[in-house]
Image 1 (cartoon, rainbow, N blue to C red):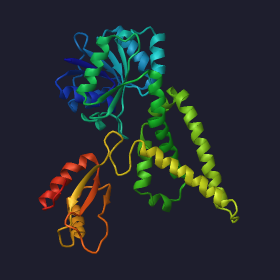
Image 2 (image 1 turned 45 degrees about the vertical axis):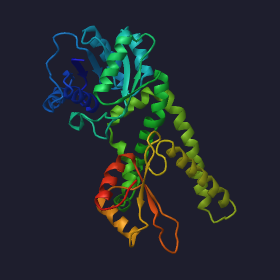
Image 3 (image 1 turned 180 degrees about the horizontal axis):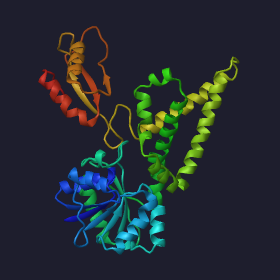
Length: 363
């Protein structure tokens, strides 16, 4: 790949352009907002000059409701040999492309699974997609050449390609992206009803839960509307759980002890299901489902007050632990006693080096 065009210089489009330009691809930037293009160019994302001939690939980085029309216009102008998009919904834009008579042999639907709560070219980063999944949704009419070109784009951006059917993609992102965004927004909206002293008490938990709620409301309206068929049933099922929780809490708030036992059991069941669901993506003790936590074994049996010294050295290392497994308590430490440190995979190496620098034997 030598040349590319990015249509839409928002967060995602400019981040793609920065990644491509950084890998030596001459990237042309196109946007209806000239200021957005100027900022992207000033950040080193590419050039505002139009290409003199069709580029190797064009990335349509506009909202889902504009994807098909934008693609049709640029195919008519012969902007590129291959086209992809970054819309977070795939089935509806593809159907609209067919209705508009787009050449879908040169089109590979795409959705990089990365983003930020900020928007616009100023928020863009060249490493935004590093090690993140990037879904591609080729259809039966997609040419092998087009798919290979899209795979090259994903590789140049440092992402991990995942191939899905458009409908399967839409159901997946409804569950793992669109529903969480809507819930974060609904939770954040409750803050408008809160007393000032309550809002001042908001800490990390509330900030984490509502982080994505600061996204572009217009863009997210477009996304949720485009994926209404997949998102609606999930929201309906969630509303049943919310009603169950509200009913249980109402019974717990009464003075009658008789129904409170069942209410506690129902509430506990809801919370346990949440623990089990989160464990599918973030197992206990850190890591991920694909990369579980690493266990570092630190010998402590032959040291004076070893646990206290180890904890002090861990504090100085300023690296987070996910958990700790202590040796069996006894009258005196055995020479082969060790402490197990549970750490996320990316912490294992720097923590091992830090502890060894302090004289600890680490496996």
